[in-house]
Image (cartoon, rainbow, N blue to C red; front, top):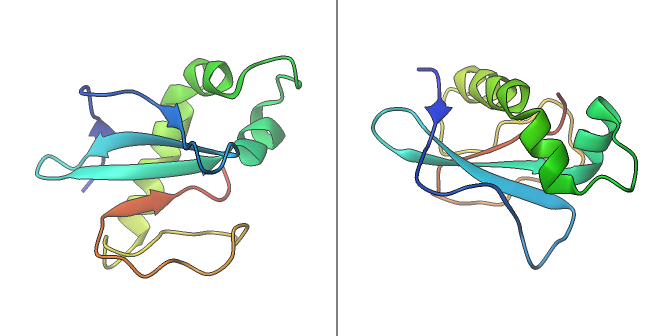
Length: 104
């Protein structure tokens, strides 16, 4: 089931780790937390160090959301992290529904 933009809340940088942006999407029944590392955004979209990570995200939000939806659809069990390439270590065990975009 494809994900859609969740309109209640916006993207934010996790305070414990300034290198990860979290935003929400929905599958129509549940809210899905999606995380994308800032280095992945910079590698894919450029923008230079002078462009704030959230601005880079906002400029490319539609592409990032499409990648999140594809990653979500590739998982048999949406309660695990979707990964194409591991860039942040092993998945954390969790019952939360999340998608980590490790590559765009």
